[in-house]
Amino acid sequence: MSALQRIAAIALALLLLLTGYGLWTTRAPPPTAAQTLQAGSGAAAPAASAMPVIDQRTLLTAQRLARLANTPEELPLAQQAVQLADNELDLAFTAAMRNLEAHPPVLSPAALAIQERLQSAQKELDGDTEDVKRLTAALAAAKDADKPPLQDRLELAQSQAELTQDEVQQANEDLLQAGGNAHQRIQMMQQEHAAAEHASTAAAPAASPLTGLQGMVGRVRLWLTLRDKRRWLAEAQHQVREIAAQLAAERKQIAAELEASRAALAQPAASQPAQHPAQASPPAATGTAAPPSLLTLTRQVAAEQHRLTLRDQRISARARIAAVYEQWDGVVAAQERTILHACLAGIAVVFGALLLLLFADRWLEHLLGRAPIDRRQLGTLRSVIGVALQIVGVVVILLVLVGVPAQLGTMLGLAGAGLTVALKDFIVAFVGWFVLMGKNGVRLGDWVEINGVSGEVIELGMFHTVLLETGNWTDAGHPTGRHVTFTNSFAIEGHYFNFSTTGQWLWDEISVAVPYGKDAHAIAAAIEKEAVAATAASAGEAEAEWRRASKGQRDSNVSAEPAVAVRPTGGGVEITVRYVTRASERLAVRARLYQAAVQLLAQ
Image 1 (cartoon, rainbow, N blue to C red):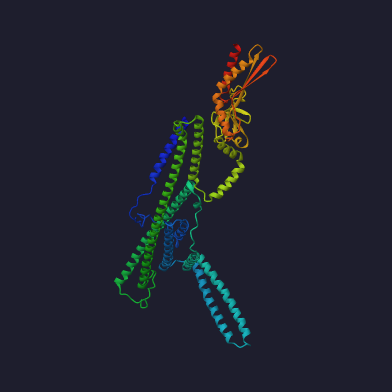
Image 2: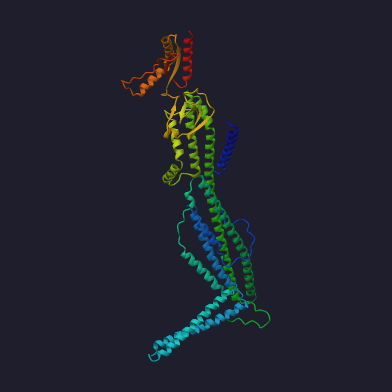
């Protein structure tokens, strides 16, 4: 193993240990007893600036968060939060009305003028309405001769009433703009809220777009979404508690006003007997304001007490909303921990697969090195198992990262069609690699001829075969030093010759010139005898294989015995010996026969 591989293995091992620690820390906690939620947030925060009369942020926030609830555990909490926020808003409307009753707003001079104009226009509108009613009744009881003038007067009265109605509406709008008629403003807001609540229909939660994602990628996206949801829940909880603190501060002020009103009510009751409001003497015409009557003080105390009760109810409602948000946050936190645990498990699988792929080659070398098989078969087996392990590792990692697609058949069909067109040569080369791995294929160390190039196979990959060129088989067979690379498609589209495997035999021959004066027949017989002795084993194996190849035909005439031919030449007699030998033994057999011929000629 190289230094780079060792460093990569150490880094992967450290990352795998860190992932295991993350898996241990994010494991699900053991079941415990039912947990109770705190209603408040501990110490109350200081009161902020005066809140608006009607604050609808809590309800809007609850409705926005309810649209994010997409699990059975979250839906009841989301509905409860919306109901509590809606109830708190109704209490806010009631409290605003009671506040106006207890403390009527002081209008500005411009608002007072508009209010007087509104009252005047309203009185005029009432008079015009009475005129229209009177003329309508008179027209119904009049004779036909008297109806035309009454009809004209009725139309004139109706036009005047419409003009007065427009003036009343304009004055009312001006008064609302000037800060007056607060009762009507609150009623309009309450009506708008009721209409919006009535118009909203309970729709099923939309399916999250992240549910289509699978594998570790989908889990990471879902984990990020849950983190955002927890942040929004924390912001909503902080907002609810902040407004609850403001309400608590206002409650203290209302309680102080109630105590002051009760003290003012107890003081006149202790100093003088209670009088009927109708019998109470009018205040003296002095420069100081008249003290409030007993009835006014009693009504003021009742209003303040009602306001205090409404404040307590609103504070309690907001405390319950904060508790619901806290419980909701716990549910989302559990989901986030579960998703993170699943992501860490996927990362552990990826790191484990990478480590196995990194050590697979070394393990195969140790395991297969002990097997009693041929060296070429060992190299082929190592190559096949190594490629298979790499493919399995890559598939496992891809499944962990992206998961199993929902439309697996369609995606595989489309991807296969596209890859078949775009990667035709690579696909043919890959299929050719399987052909070369077969019985009649090639192995590392074989001497083969591919497309006219002969050489020794030094590399056999999934897509390419590399030869160390040695020239044609009729040459001396010395390597030229050049590496020639072929795509494995030649095994499908072309042909190749393998001179090292079973079934591949060479007919070789030598020629010896015998001068006149020598016994050519004796020399030919001696050379033939030497050729038979040198090629006896090869000839027997060749004949056996040729008979098996002829499928057991009885009349097949197959012979691998050496043959000798003698023919005269200009300088003597030429003896040619033709024999069968293996490609790897060709040079040795030829050298032996030449040596025997030289010795015979020298005798």
